Length: 552
Ligand code: NAD
Image (cartoon, rainbow, N blue to C red):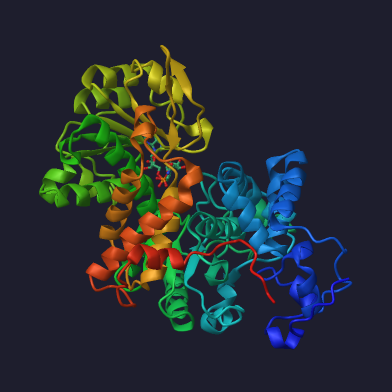
């Protein structure tokens, strides 16, 4: 037995004994060293063997890989997250390709559907309509005071799964895990929030185990007042905290973003993060074609949060390249379930109207491709198999390098497969996807499609906002993040048809994006700290490293 005794539990400032083992932000489990076991009152509370963190990672992977289903793996990883955050993040950060689909999409969707039944212990905060009038004191129940980023949802449009009510809590939890894993945002500074305003999901309302408030969704003025009390309380309890809106339904998402973007540092990842990742894909594609964004004509299949978000940011980018706003809008064409978005239509919501074109109505997508002759098509309607052979052949006829982004999730909703995109364009498509596809070899050339995954953007944006203590999240920051992401695709990736960098490099990519975002905050007078001489070094110094620290 080791006899070295460097400090007593009281002297270290850490909790001791079981309290330390039960504190996930500090726990190292069986990796506590002999000296730590002596100093921290752990002797006898752990088996005698001391493992390294690397050995623990191997053990976690061994157990995980034996589990039969992705949901089992999700539950297992969730348990690890609750016990030992450093080990959880070491596993996820070191194996992003394997772990991200387990802790986030697609598995998190299934986990949310089953959330009430696999529930083990709470994580984050549930703010319910019953808390109206006391949201600030409720937020003060959170044990950490230095919260820098909140991801909040009301569970109404969870991924493509619709209204999952309070079960949607898996999304803010999973998303904040990605902030830490992909960009090193410190887990102690993150807070997942579920605004439980009821649910219209009949199955859940009838489920005795449902964890949320059993009432129809709050709507109208009452809903807005509830969200407003929450937003005010966030800034009162955690001054300057970044708020990221997630998976709100269209009818609320756009309005909430408009209401708060000029008041607090907030953004909506479904709208703005998606926009930046898609714009980055376009920038990368244009590196291949050598043309300018302002010279493109983009036709979107879908006209929801993703499509109009991408259009809004692309318009800002074109304006920054010298186009007028109205000319830039003429380069973005939308198609929704009722056809091409044109001026003669009387059924268009507010967010589609700016993109209504002076054109005769067109009902189907192939006819729209023939009429508009786009240089790029972007699918974000969640309707599978809509980029048909005819559509892709038409794109290939009109363009030397047609841009084809099939961004809808999950795979069954993808507008086309990677194989179809390459085959029907004679291998000339500049292709990006929302769902994962394996490399395709065609006529002796291997194409490596990569996902336009928001996880390339939002973690770096969040880190940049936090590092600069930014007072607002602006469109210019999202433009900078898109440019930074595109700049980080090496030439060798371009040559194999990859429009995004490898996911394994995401922490490095995020450090650059965070720097670009922070630079905008400093340049625009939106930062809450002085500009350091070396912004990138400063940003990197803020990144959480999940390696174990020595406590004695
Ligand atoms: P949304 O509900 O806001 O929008 C969907 C849009 O599709 C609506 O405008 C609707 O009118 C339109 N639509 C539905 N059926 C149609 C049809 N048959 N023809 C033409 N249009 C039709 O959803 P969203 O947030 O914009 O997401 C849409 C899809 O994009 C989802 O599959 C989502 O997973 C995917 N997405 C991918 C990424 C990514 O890869 N990075 C990011 C965000 C969203």
